[in-house]
Length: 309
Image 1 (cartoon, rainbow, N blue to C red):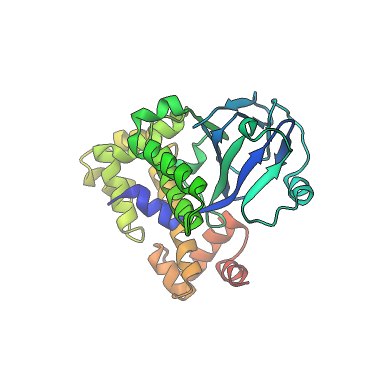
Image 2: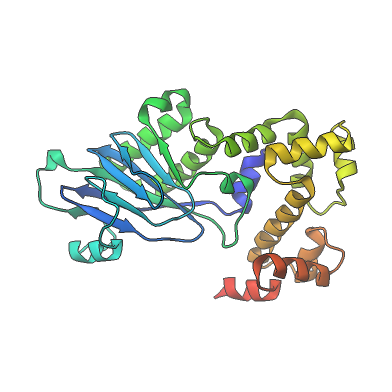
């Protein structure tokens, strides 16, 4: 099976465009923390500095993209500032109503920084090694994108659609941005050994086969022994290789994935909690409720009620 497709559907990946900019110096803005969101900024014209606390600011040029993977607060600026007015204040001062271009400053148009900014949402409590292995700040340089044609072509198409101002452009861009996120995960452009290992694990003939088995039937009675036997490895060798590549043990991965699938099933509101428990591989609803509450700090019933609000 396509593991990344299954993971992104289960975690409920959704792209969202929030504005296109026309910033003329001096300008700076603080983008606030936002849980379960990965934000992106794609520079079309000019330059933009991105600063995340604890890291040196990076400078984006035309065609470069920054991904703030864990929704951390960050500062966008013309000159590398690390402090700035909150985004909400900047939006209010600019009279921005959520439509069209966010204009800040009144300098020369040809000197403006123009960007496409958006974010990727995930289901509350969404978790997977693919997400946790991403650095807080990812810098994708236009010069490096030629090695990943799908990513390069999609980012170029986003730019053309955004600045053409055609009917349906925003809807197209939000769908394309989801492709961008997946292609970022699949590419070798992200400087993260942990992410490279996870992607290698999913592509590995034996570890990938074990992952596919767990994803195809998360409710099955999987053990370390029968997974190792399935892929033709010894128990200890399978265990060590799985943990090395995926960053967690096979049984910890299975437990976490079952709970992620249970979130998806609870959101669908088509199954009773007992049925969700069975599909997630638990012997009883009580055992499922204990595991769910321990991981997410609320019961399955409370989670379903919270999502229904």
